[in-house]
Length: 281
Image (cartoon, rainbow, N blue to C red):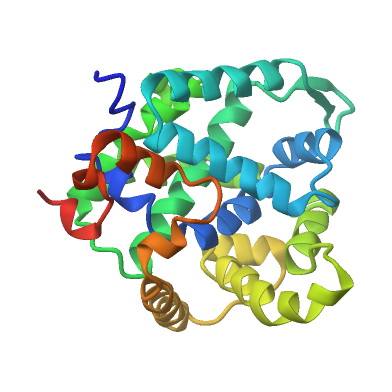
């Protein structure tokens, strides 16, 4: 492993896919899905000030994904160690039993990981990013590495689409949209913002939130109790949104924080630039 290249090389599916602008919509879908696990969402609510620091939380997540995807091996390992240390110090109370538990329980870490990685793959691919089934499986296998960084045993992490589907099927009886999930749902639809930015929130952010919600699996819509458009309509909207966002020059998009892609290109050269056509090389 080349320390300068990092944990994911420019030849990986992850390197190319994580540069796509639809990753932001995928990240919101992941939050909706993660909130359906009562213990996972309770851990967030008891240990996070996300309701007052919405953008900070999103940017910290983006920073972790960017650092582990495009940073050096040392930077990725350092980011993982920081996450593991934080998690080791945090606990929460089970909303049903009153039991105290650590947020770094393997079952919780696995749920958060799978909801996140599945959301990235589902939204980006469904919005038009070209991936074959084999490449989609390769992406999931690559993310046994990121699972290790947060403290999971890679051997227990789904490594292809069939294993991921089996995992979610197994988890469905344990999911619920309780009071905590409703808090997250309300927050994602109406995140606190400066009064002058409320019109922009209503026009832009709510569309992102609605699209992310619509892309959830049908059982998630049933649990939340809010309908979604027909799957074909959702796919058309994802593709239209993806086409629009991809019209924005990549160099301009990558100027937004945390700029990990630009730093990787400066470190490795212009050939390291992420692009969909490079996935099948």
